[in-house]
Each structure stands twice: as C-alpha cells, then as structure tokens.
Length: 265
Image 1 (cartoon, rainbow, N blue to C red):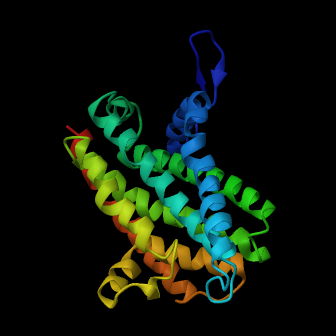
Image 2 (cartoon, rainbow, N blue to C red):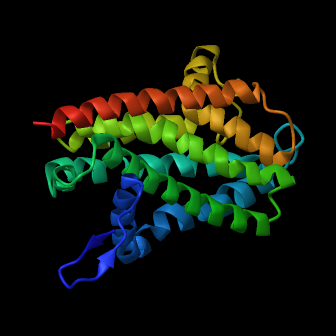
Image 3 (tube, helix red, strand yellow):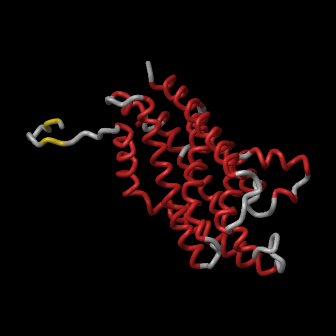
C-alpha cells in the first residue's frame, strides 16, 4: 500500500505484468467497437458465405462431415491467429517507434519481462473473447457437434501465444511498418489459405504438404477440428501441444532479448 497525494492509500498490483495488462484494457474500453468487424463479424460472414453458401454445393461434405461443420473449427483457429498477429504487429511497432509507450513503461518499476508479459496477456484476452463469441454464434448454427468444443479455448490461447510471441520479436526488430504488411502478405495469408482451414492439407501437392504441417496454424486447426467434431486428431494431442508450446517459448525468449536490446540503455 502506498499513500496518494491526497492521503488516500491505493494497492499496487502484486504482479507488475497485470498493471501493464490494465493499461491496455483501459484503452480497449474506448476502442473495442473498431475491432468488432474484423475480429468477429467478418469470420461470421465467412461462415455464412463458405460454410452455408459453398457448402450447399458440396453434397458429400469432407470425409462424410457437412462442409459447414468441417469448416468452422478451421475458421476459429484462423481467426485466433489473425487477431493475435494483428495485435502483435502495428501496436508493438507503434509502442517502439511512434507513441513509445514501452519506453515510458520501462522507466517505471517494471522489468522487460513484465512489459512483454502484460502485453501478451492482453493479446490472449483479445483472442479468447473473440473466439468465445465465435463459438457462441457457430453453436447457434448447429456447427459444433461435440461438448469437447469448449477445449477450443485453451487451444486458441496456446496458438495465440505461439504466433504472437515471435511476432512481438519481429515487430520490435523491424525499422519500417512496411515489413509488417509483408508479414501478412507472405506469411499470414498463405498460412490461412493452405494450413487446412478451407480444404484438407492432404489435397495439396506433396511438396506443399510439409510446409503446411510446419505452420502453427495447422496444429491448432487439427486440434480444434477434433474438439468440435468429437473425433481424434490426425496427429497426437501431446505432439500438437508441445509443438505450439515450443513456438511460444522460442518466441518469448527472442522477444525478450529484442525488447531488452531496444529498451535498456
């Protein structure tokens, strides 16, 4: 407890990273409407367009599963990836290059790990709230065939960390926001198209399958699809989780090193 200027005592957060998270949440309260379309309405429109519209012309579905039911878990994972990377690119770059929030935070009694962890917690908040709403809407469409669909939430949380942490490192290292646009053009869009979201990876030529399997998105898609359909994943659950965790840990270590290089004088 510390005294304020007026003599009132306020409790300091016991976990400093939560103070950083609170900073971003306060800002989000004033800007959340701007992200509704991109993070929620657009995927729902995609479900209607592809799942209901295109799916009506796919009589046999995919592997005997109606196309809408097969597509939804892929869209869930893809949406989580795009939300996580969206919040790990321009906001991080801006906090270094334009508004320099990270520099202000580093002058407070916050360690580099606190700054990084607090912002990553905010990204997880964005991912989980977006996907929770997505699950609710798709459940109303009857596209969730198993009560295991709730397991999607921890999966997308791990996916969010697996892609956001290395993207934090990338955004902190680049000198121009043009590099952020290139990340979406040459990494995010190809991943979204070829990692099993809209069609099975097995339908790709052999040379393209292994790059698709190497992406974090495919591992999350396979887990989400297994959860919503109530079937076994193509790969082992432990293998998927360890692979995503390795991306998250590697990204964390790299991001912390780059943040330290940029912020510690």
